[in-house]
Each structure stands twice: as structure tokens, then as C-alpha cells.
Image 1 (tube, helix red, strand yellow):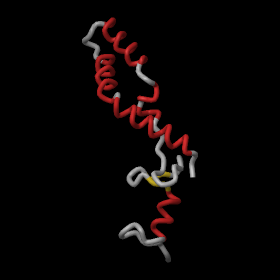
Image 2 (image 1 turned 90 degrees about the vertical axis):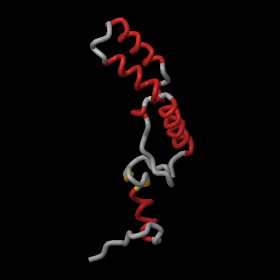
Image 3 (image 1 turned 90 degrees about the horizontal axis):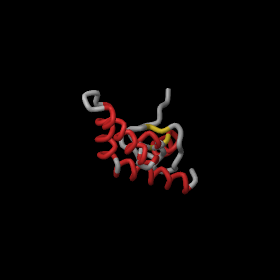
Image 4 (image 1 turned 30 degrees about the vertical axis):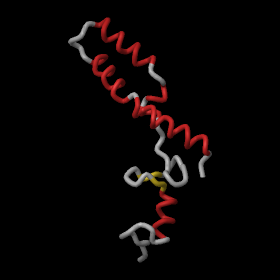
Length: 101
């Protein structure tokens, strides 16, 4: 089980990224547009730099929803390989059976 503080920090980052997504996308589009004057593009970059760092989606860490484990996660289910194996062995995931040969 991961530290509660690490899990909460990641949750705050997710909220901030969602909150600033529109503003960040708009400023990035202005900064990349070559048809605009250079001063306007530079001003957009400065505004982008003033936004909170944790509002960037790059800073979000994929963590297991059940345990908070930061590594070995399946993105589709958002749980770690260990939690997935335990749930599958307990019969909690429909259609998933333990492999044997």
C-alpha cells in the first residue's frame, strides 16, 4: 500500500489538470501558431509558465485505484498487476480465469 500522502498528491494533480485543461490548451495553441506575431506567442508562453506546475497532465502518475501502487499498472483497468491477480483468483472479475496448462 502506497503512502496516503502520495495518493492524495496525485489526486490533487488530477483535479488541477482537469481544471486548467481548457486554459492550457488555448495558450498552447496560441504559442504554437506561427501566423501570430512573435510578441503574442511569447506572452502566451509566459502565461502558460505562470499556471501551477501540477496542472500539467505530464505530472500525473498512473497509480492503482485499490492499493496506490505506482508501477505495474494496467491502464485500461487502472489497477496494478498484483491487485488484478488477487481479484481474478477470488473470482471478482467476470470472465477472467487463472491460466493452467
